Amino acid sequence: MKPLQKYLLLAPLGIWLLLFMVLPYAFVLVQSFLETDMFGHVLYHFNLNAYQKVLSSEVYYRTLLHTFVSSIIVAFICILVSMPLAYFIAFKATRYKALLYALIVLPFWMSYIVKAYAWKIILGQSGILNSFLMYVGIIDDPVQFFLYSDFATIICLAYILTPFVAIPIYSAFEQIPKPLIEASMDLGASKWTSFWNLIWPLSLPGIVSGGTFALVLSMGDFLSASLMGGPNTLMVGNLVTSLFGTSNDRPVGSVIGVIMFFWILLLLIGSSRVEKKYSTYTS
Image (cartoon, rainbow, N blue to C red; front, side, top):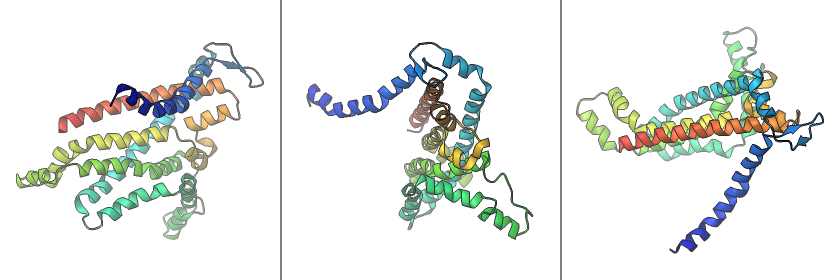
């Protein structure tokens, strides 16, 4: 294939990336160096006022830190749930493996809002969980923190993002040669020893990939915090929505976007290096 033909084939992708990725990011970066007047109009006076406002305000960096910690918890829960599920499908299930895998993919067919509202029904004061706990006598009154709290936001995000983690972990398990595990067992290794010394290191690229998915997606989410967290739960997505909407302070909102962009970029670079390191080691 001639070089010109290669460039022509790549042209649609290049135009798409330019229009919908490079230019919007560039616009956000430029807007972060502007300021607004008292009426919310953007003034094209290039300065660092928006950056100074973000870095000097406790609300902004505490929200960034809270979002990052919550996202780590969500990613950990997703991995914790996905590991035994993916392990069972990959190594134990035989006849119904395709069906079980389809059940993991099935939540993708359902609307995000429907899944979030389902958790509101479960965690509400008169919801399924509180009603059950009161019925069996564990509690006398409905538990308040089940809904409109960090707990509710984390549970909802973990439920929604678990398929994103389970699929790469399952793929990593499937790529492990079964004769290698059998040889480990034949040499006298217990199931636990085989898991930690063989299956775990060979599946680390999939675990890191899935955990990164959950971490990045939960950091940018705003709907779960709005529906499940209530007014007392503030994450970066809600903060940016407020700055671009109610507050009409787009330069400050752009600064938060720029910080999140480089933050997530560093996470992706670190994740890529870890995956490459363990992929090279296991190969």
